[in-house]
Image 1: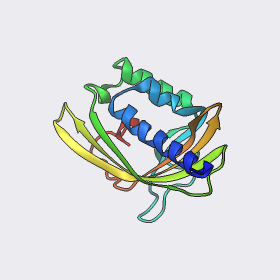
Image 2: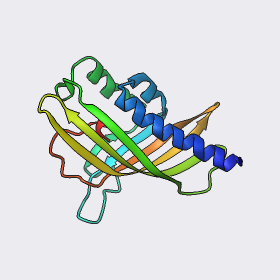
Image 3: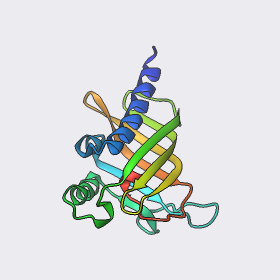
Image 4: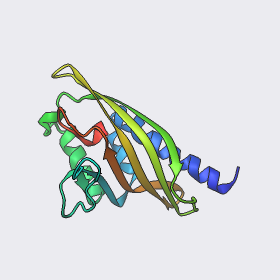
Length: 168
């Protein structure tokens, strides 16, 4: 197997693990997938055809400038200080159509994937499906790949309930 194929397979595994860790509420392992200086962004649509381009100046569904923001969110979920996440929704993440957006290198992967997430909210007994695509930029750190930047495009952005990191 060529190096580029091996790197791509390793990157795809990171994306699959991300969904599994969210589904199994393995928060520490999920956070470890992200670099400390990562960016996590779910832009909002500015009109029917255009997404926001600057999370610092435009409305976003979710934006964290680094892993500390993600860690703070997980602390609120774990400690019950997130009323919207109590009881905790059940999720099933599906990741497919993973493609390299540029030739993989030993230090960097830029991947596009299609995703869907089914979320069951026990309090309301309602199930919702969120779907879209994601752009992941992965960086090689020591002997593993970590998420340096994640941009998630929510294509069904009429949100009938709350939206959180575990929903997408």
